[in-house]
Structures are given as structure tokens and as C-alpha cells.
Length: 496
Image (cartoon, rainbow, N blue to C red; front, side, top):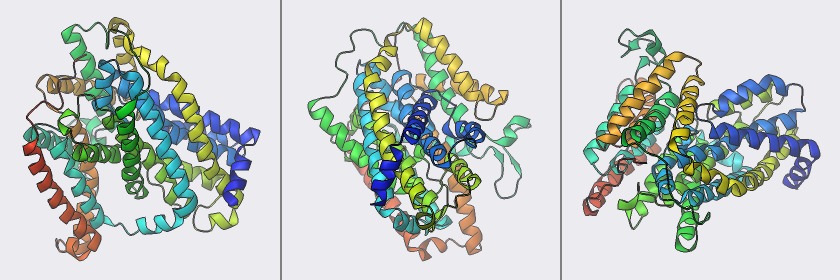
């Protein structure tokens, strides 16, 4: 009954308008690399003080999960992730664009995102408080186990296991640049003042994928991303079925880890891709344009974003930067998230939850009709598209911290990305290692501090022990399975 009341209240003219504005802005933010929902929400926060609190939170929430929808567009079309969570989507999504299947990739990304968003809304409605309490049982030792388990993905993200592992380790080393999180000591800054703050994910991603792609295109003299007729805009038959099932699996893979603070969409999308590759009958085709490689990660990306609202609303615990700003907005409006929220402000909280159902429908309505329009970007001559993409990359690199140092970082990593593509080195393991590196180091050191330096703490905690055992088992199974796979190139040079 409360959910029904919330849905009815959300459909009022004011709330519906703010929901539409939120998801529209979110889609635009997702499409533009580097802008990011956190910075946009922070910019809009002072303006929302003039509006009704319910409408404001509806708009800010819609902006957040709408950005997860939009992030896939540039990943698929021009190999530049709009959001960090869309990095892995580019692996197969851009290949599909090069094959004239951009419309199908965009269509399944939108539908997968809708499935994930709707599932998240349903779980928030019926099981949020109970799930959030369970997620709180995760401490540093459990994080170590979970992150070790995530590191097994380095084995399957590249056809050459040695190159994949090496790239992953390099990414983890790059994550240590800056100040030690516990002691504050400077590390690997080589006397460069700008490196004291560490390397930001967005410039690294934009450089490796975006600028690196532009350099490859320039080197081979590309004229277009794709030449020819685009053909059908929606997947059909067996491909549609495979994409939809991958979306369901990605939704489940992304939601439950997403309840844990720190488990960002960028990580769970890699997990979903890894799952799809492990269970596939043709793992050797991943990286060449399979629809599951787009559907699974995109669903996981959006599912994780929705999952973050469970601990936020029920316990007042944000799982990421964007949700931390939304928490600040709630506090500014005098709304205290937590177990009593559903008792003290029932209409408010159920209206916000109801807006998530409405917002996901609005996003689907906004995105599906535009599939054909977005797909035609791949037909634009590269002499026109290339400079525009480069400009967007540089603006995106500058935006997160508003410093020219990050622009230089993006340019340097553009050269590195170009060299890695030409030498047939995989980019995805490097990004995964970069994402996991800081989280793993902090969790490991906190765990050892708790135990006085003893490793036995990982065996004394059942969840941590179980995850470590799973890590060993999955690593062995992955190595055995990969030996049976033909030695074909799964991640070819990204040629345009």
C-alpha cells in the first residue's frame, strides 16, 4: 500500500517533471566522458535548496542512475567510456559498432539497464532493510577475500595470460602513486608535485581508450568507424535471447556486491563480463563483438547503482561519492536516513522509491527511440569526428579535479594506450588492476592492523575464508578451461 501511495505521489506533475529532468541530465552526463554524476550532483545541490525536498531527491537520484544508462553510448560508438562503469562495455560494444551492429549494441544496453534498474527498485521495495543489515557484516578481511576473488578476472580478460597478469600488476602499481593512505608518505611521485594527489581514474581511462584510439586511427589513416549500411537496429532470434539472459545474470551479479560500500559499478561490470566469458560456449569470441559482452556488464553497472540506495535509505550509509552527496542533500533537508526513515517519513521515502520505477521507464522511452540516431554517429567521417572526440577527451580529463595535470596524464596514457594496442597488449586488465589496487591495499593493511600482523585473521572469519577458497578454486578452473580454448586472439588490435 505504501509503494502504491508513493507511485501515485510520484506521478504528480511536479515530481514527474523533476524525475524527467533528472534522468535526462543523467543521460547527458553519462554520454559526456569525464563529467560524472558526482560532480554534477554537487553543482546542482545548492540550486535544489529552492525546491521541494522530495522533488529534489527524485531529480538527484534520477541523475545518478540515468548517468549509468548514458555511459554506454560513447563506449559502444567511439570506444570512449562515458562512465568508469562502462569501460568493459567498450570491449565488445565497439567491435559491434565496427561491424555495423551499433544499433543492436545500444538496444541491448538500454534494455539490460532497464531490467537491472527495475529489479533494483523491486528489491529496494521489498527486501532493502534486511539485505542492508547483512551487507554491514563485511569488514576489511571480507573485502580482502572479495577483492582477491575479483583478481581472478585478470586470468580471463586476455588471451595471453602473462600479458593480462602483467598489465593487471602494472595497474595495481599505478594505483599506489600519491600519498600512502595510512601513513601519508609520498610514493612513486618522482618529484612531480601533481602526482602527490595520485592518478585519477577518468584521465587514465580517457587516455588509454579515447586518445589511444584516435592515435591508432590516425596511424592507419581511418576514414570512418564503419562504412556501409547499418542494417537492423534491434537484435533478433538467438542473439536477442542471449542478450536478455546475459542482462538477467548481470543484474544479479551487480546487485548484491553493490550493497557493500566501495563496490563501485566499474568493478561489478568487470565481474559480470568475467561471468559471461566463463559460462559461454564460445569464450574465444569475447572481444570480437558478442552481445553478451555488452548486455551483462551494462546490466551489472546499473544494478550496482540501484543497489547503493538500499544501505543509503535504510542505514544512512553511502556506497560511493554520488550517493554520499545525495546523503548530504537528505541531511540538508532535515531527513535522517536510517531504520526510522520508513516510519517517520513514509510518504517521502516511498515516493522516492516509486520514482525509481518511473525513472527507469522514462529512461527506456528516452533511449530506445534514439538508438538509430546514436548509431549513425559511426558513419560520420573520421576527419570530422576525430577532432571532436579528442576535444571531448581533454575536457573530460580536466573535469574531475579541474587541473591541467590530469590533461597531461590523459595524453601520456593515450600514448601508452596506442603502444599497447599496437603490441597487442590488453587494456582491460590494466584498468581492473588500477581499480582494485587501492581498495586491496587499504583492506589488506587494515586487516593486518586488526590482527597484529597475523594472516590467521582471514581463516578466523568464515566469509573471508570462503572467498579465499573460492579464489583458489576459480583460478585453477579458469587456467584449466583456458587450456582447452583455441589460441585465437580474443582481444585484437582495436582497428577502426
